[in-house]
Length: 55
Length: 327
Image (cartoon, rainbow over all chains, first blue to last red; front, side, top):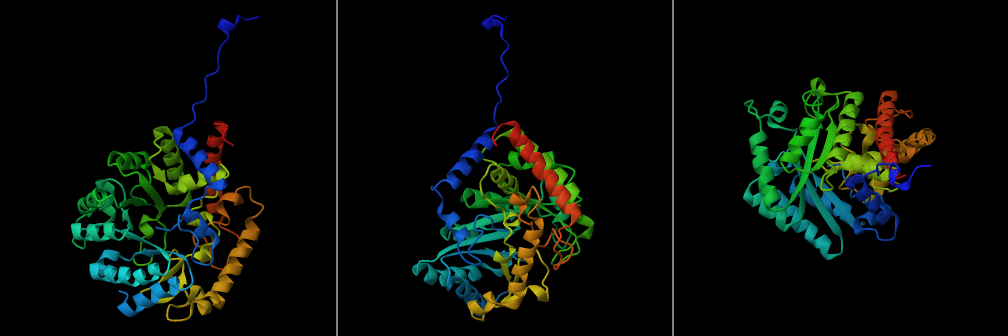
């Protein structure tokens, strides 16, 4: 049996900051802490898509 | 150009029965309309704001006409300003020229710097064409070096509104290759200040969110275009065709909303979504862009070439995210 001190440790996976931020944003969006502009998505014709504007 | 009467009717039409309205002013080149045109817009919108409407103005410009006077006006009136810039000078100047053949790059950068000083620069849309599609890293690095970190890359397609751009059009596969390289480079640079809308929308959806670019909303009926004569058509990705003529801003909104063409378009979108529902990637694309993903307006089945490349793009991003155990 290997001595603990000699055990090879796996390289930890370093998650890119941009993905951590994306995950945080998803958590906020799926919680109740939604931004005012999200609400526009749930309204009638031509009210939707504020964030997703084409330009 | 839209006359004052039509301009007022346009703003009144959309503000009459909605709380949140976003106006996107574009052309041609929207600054050619002159500052007075936009002063009128603000004056008309002010009455609606007093009634509680939340109004946003976005403007997409080539930035060559930007002056300190424009910047002051935009800053005072909370406009979001996006600029069209097709990468470094050697690419941009091949694509965007004045009538005398001179490239506009130097003037665009002057305009961007003025917008930046006033903190109203809202990023760049970069057209990807036969001129620049082979250089994703060079283009990305150029933008970062210029401290331009809000980016959108669009594929030049064979159908344009004004000019024949078929010699510049690239295939879905070429565009996908470009975007995959951009995604990988975005991860490598790992700078949270960099915003690439399409990529971040796909990442968000794969992670379980619902931040959707218009092409992933499956609600193309939510975007309409008002032309200078007040006619209302579908999204401006489409050419101006009778089947997507929904009415005129001088008509009552309720009449336009119940236009047979609009209802037929909604039915078509529903049928397309039903067709796509069994696809593993439906949760992202929702049938995709009603214009680009289909051969004809009445097609239910999306183009195979488009689907294959979108699937390749989604799979690449998803595999990468999975490798970090984030889903």
